[in-house]
Length: 151
Image (cartoon, rainbow, N blue to C red; front, side, top):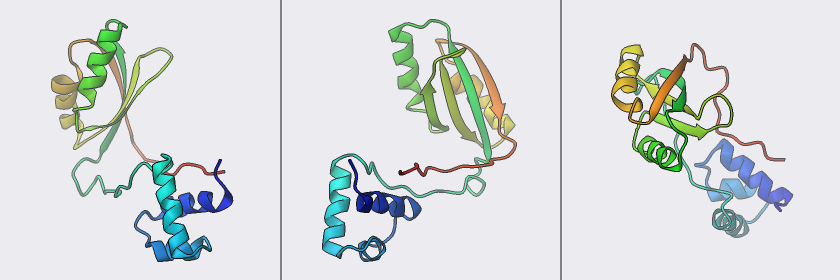
């Protein structure tokens, strides 16, 4: 279980992963040495998985965000494994989730525009083992965060 200080550390790091240890220590009322040790333990125990920079998709020319429902032609372990392994290698795919319900996977991807999406779909995603897809192009991102609720 996490105590109040560890939760505060995680919250502060979610807000600013580049915060200095001295600044973080001040915000959570610890000495810098004690704070550094807590952060180290949070890493070791798996609470902190890593740090990333949030990049601007428009400036990087990948402004079209799409969600794709994927239905596989067969639901065997071999087909699932082949799909999972191939998706790992596709840079446009930001997230891929196996789901329960009317389709097998939900894929979140970013591409330049609709023409790029058509090429991505035809040449990359529609591979052996995929029976059908349904695409939802995002018109407006209402909320986009990686911050987890810490209670």
